[in-house]
Each structure stands twice: as structure tokens, then as C-alpha cells.
Picture 1 (cartoon, rainbow, N blue to C red):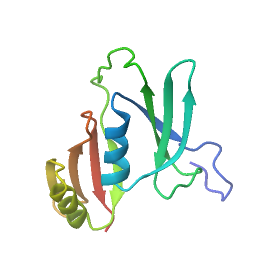
Picture 2: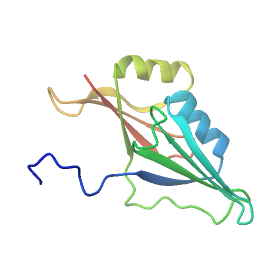
Picture 3: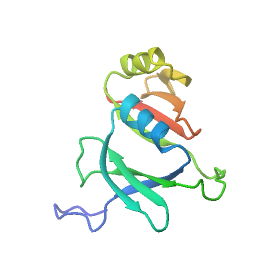
Length: 137
């Protein structure tokens, strides 16, 4: 770990999820979780789209890339090594309550992982990818 104030030599740009139903995934991540579409790249000849989403519409912040093959592409299998996307939220109890009122099911209600620990909740996106919500205070 560097102890100086120089900028890091590397930084996380994005993680990619292959998706079947792009509209449902955008509705969930943007409509339910409050992300914004930052940019979209269409590959007409190859018949797929890349849609980058994130918070604050900042092209320099970490993003989720949604890879969508227009014709369905090959079958996707979630590997056993995949874990979850972690998203920090203010007022995790209120955030989860709003999600539940809009029809989102929580796999784990907001609670600390250990006594006095950070409060987390677990849920899944429309295609079954796990999301961990972490309270920011």
C-alpha cells in the first residue's frame, strides 16, 4: 500500500453482467436501485448492446456493464464463484421498505451480520444475481 498522496496506478472501472432482458434489468437497477444509464454502445452487425449504469451519471465512477445479445445468444449459467454486487445506501431500512412496497422481495431483511456490525440486506435482480445492500450509517 502506498503511503504518498499520488493518484493510484489503477482503479476499478466496471463489472459486467450478461443479461437476457435488458429492459427488466434497467428497470430494476435504474428504477428500483436509483442508478442511471451512463452510456450505451450498440453493435448492429454483431447484434448486441453494452449499457453502462452507475450512480451520479459520472463516467469516472465505478459502473455495471450490462451485456445484452439481441437474439438471446448462448445460454448463461451463473458460476459458483459469483458472489454479489455490493451497494452502499443511506437509510437502509427506509430503502428496503421502499423496495418491498414496489414488489421487490428481500432474501435477507436489513440486520447486522454480527453484534454492532454493519447492517446489510440481500436481494436478487430480475435475472437472479445477488445484491448486497450495505448501510452507510
